[in-house]
Each structure stands twice: as structure tokens, then as C-alpha cells.
Image (cartoon, rainbow, N blue to C red; front, side, top):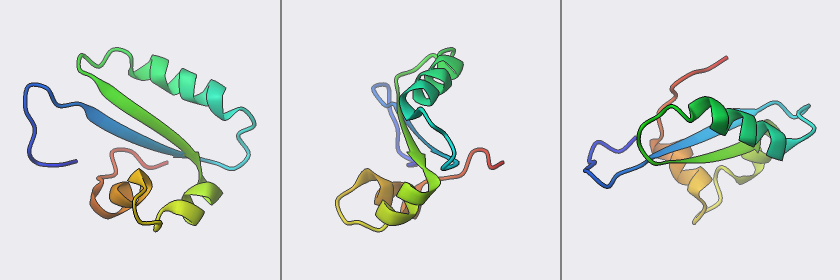
Length: 76
């Protein structure tokens, strides 16, 4: 999370899930519905762990920024 935020800020969530998840879209919808009570705009990215490992260091992708500057909110 960036420390600077304002009235028009949003929250970005990256959820890394197990590779066994068969329907990534369905899981994304399920998580979004669970976060629906958040009273501010948010973006949600869902990535399988193996894909995350492949792309987390690619320059120019949001996944790299998340890896370098993001904060873990919950780890299972």
C-alpha cells in the first residue's frame, strides 16, 4: 500500500491462489462479492501461484510493483 492517498484513491488487491483452482473467473467473482462491503473503489487481481512466480519480476507489470511495494494483508 502506498502511504499517500486521497479522496479519490482506491485499494488494489492481488490474491494469489493455488494452482489447483480450475475456474479463475469464478473465484475472482467470489472474492469480489466477499469484498463488496468495502465502501471505496477497489481493483482485484487474482493469479495462480505458478503464474505469479513467472511474472512477478517482469518490468512494467503491476505484479512486479505489488511484489516490491505491496503489503501482505492475509496469508494462509
